[in-house]
Each structure stands twice: as structure tokens, then as C-alpha cells.
Image (tube, rainbow, N blue to C red; front, side, top):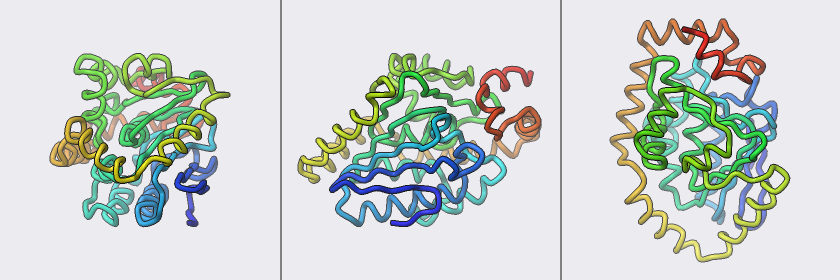
Length: 273
């Protein structure tokens, strides 16, 4: 497998996909090239003998920051190749429903669309010292459009989901663990070994059991496709509104979508007024 934005390593039935440190400048934005690679990776992994797919980032500060707000139409077009729909949310829901068992190994910041991507994975493990989570779209005047509303509400309950999204704040790994956002927060030195061991253990067991179990869990915990479509439509409609455009442009002037500016994104959003 050869990709533009991913470095892929196979270990038997386990596939490790690492977002390259300079893959989507300036800090692993979820842009069309990365979405194209994710589509190709999922398709090829499903066609192969892969059982467990692990996602991680080579950038210590950013896992996936968020979508590139200047290229929304382009990245949505890439999703059509797998799902038949121009919707990042439907691509992520496809991943949740896939026979593949997916694990996100999180170090650095993962926000908005990036957070929705890891929420679509079956399991999430994060570095206690460095992982930062946020679902900040309401800070720009729009709703999360790729599954954040559906997943967060089911994982942490109504009140905490509203807190997380309406505050547009950053949450560290320990608080994310307490809220049910992630499976576990682990010391950074232990994270990779733990995830690798778990992935290989799962891959040893019959694949048919993985699929049946995921289907049954998803029947309880994964929102219907129509809810994902509705959120996707509301996001697209929202970003076109004058107020949202004004806030996005103001954020860009204050360092939004720059590496240094987004190190303290929550503070920046709060200062927009």
C-alpha cells in the first residue's frame, strides 16, 4: 500500500497507519489528500486479510487537528468514492460499521473533525501527558457534522456532551477518560506497547466473531445513518451562514489553521467574543 499522507506498516493481521508528521501541513489537517488516503486504506484493508487497524500520528503535537475549513467541498467529494455520499460523517460511520476492528492511539491534539474520526474508531487510547480533545465547532457557530453529536451524547450522556460542545474547550486525557470519551489514558511510554499488544491479541481470535459482535454493539450504540446525514447537512448549511463565516475569518486572522496558533486554540476561540 502506497499513500500520500499515511505511512502503513503490516504486522500479520494487524495494520498500523501513521499520519506522517508533515503529511497535511501545518498540523495534520483533515484535508482532501488525507481523506483520499483514508478511503483507499479502508477499502484495501477490508479487501485484504487485515483484522485490526491501528491509527496513530507521527506528529507529537497533533493527531488530527480538524478539517481544513478552506477545502470543505473538496474533502467531501473524496468520501463519495467509498460511501457514495459527499459526507465525512457517512465515511466515518462506514468505518464504525466495517468488519475491521479499529483502534486510535492518540498523542497530541485531536479536535473537531479529527475527534469525530477517533470517535468512529472502535477504541481510543491516549497519552496522559500530551493528548488533548475538543469538539469546538459551536465556538464558530456551527454544529459538529461528522458524528460528534451522536457519539459524544451516547458515550458521556446529555449534560457532559453539551458541556464539551458548547464550551468549545480543550479536555486533557485524564478528564476525557473520566467522561467516557476514551477507553484509557496511559503514560506515553506505555501507550504504544499497550496498543500493539491489544491489537495482536484481538487479531488472534476468529474474525467472524469480530463482525457479529460489532454488529450487535452497533445496533445499540451506533446512531442511524439518517442522523449522521442530518448532522452533515446542518454543518454544511451552518458554515455558509454570515455569522459563521465572520467567526471563521476572524479565527484565521488570529492564528486558526496555523501550528502555533492552535496550540492554544480554546483560548483563541474564547477571545473572539
